[in-house]
Image (cartoon, rainbow, N blue to C red):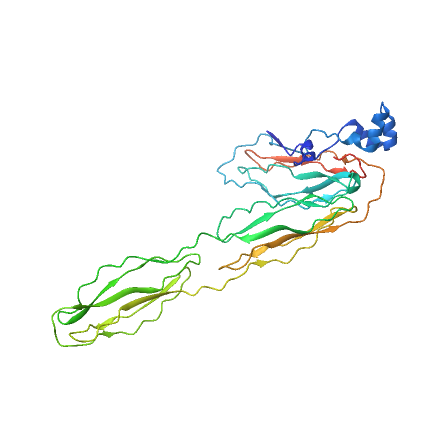
Length: 401
């Protein structure tokens, strides 16, 4: 089985891969001057198109990278799969020229073992970069619409959205400014308020003569979660109950216990007291509340913590107007209602505003394929790769790779 990277023609149309003019006109343009190469063409029209760079508008169909299985290897024993992991894409590097290339690449961060899945996809990407002087009229920079907010896997996550430079400014146009990446807290699950259960039946009277007390209780059926309203009311009530008359004696209650603690995850705390002596006869009755609850104090809001801004990137154009970027990240999410919304995570500024000098077009040239890498496994099924690079980039309207 052989797996390849993106097709060469796809990048020219907005996908990944390398667009290459791997045709005879390209070789002639590399080995000779544009005028000399044009002189070898049959018609005057073909010569003019060659000199103007139109002869290199066609793209070739091919692959920028090939992957294949290793030769037959001995069978492995039991194996815990460890899949291949790609690293992050690097920054785009502008190669120069009127219709040249911008390149970026990524590396394999963790290689797969014998039973893991190998990495798939392109290792290097390119896109055409057209300078302003090659366009018919000047125009302002255009940003894409904001993407949808990213999905949250937990309530502590940060959701992000981004946009990009859709069209760089043409000669005399205004550059792009403003944030390219924003973040906001995920918000977590829906708030839940505290809820009491139903009151239980009254107990039997506490005395056999005169006026006694009976009690009833209820429980906290649902504690508050995610900053919902806490419960503030009695859990145990007492009321007088009348039986036959006897000598009078007042009710006696114990002092309140200390409030219970507010442990991690608890939103209610409690205290209670007891009836030491129930009232007898004409004695004074007991107060109603024997157990009370109040909500735990909420922690103060904590805003999210942002890292310092990173270094500004290199300008993606040396002349005729370009952009450079810098980024920062959320190091700690907001807690307890703290702020972390509408925060800019990526900025851009104009650069390379001076006009480019005109020069003779030079076409892009690709290097030879390098040797196949060693197999990623010693038994079973593995993978190996090979790649090639751009030997010299197109400049001043030369054909791109």
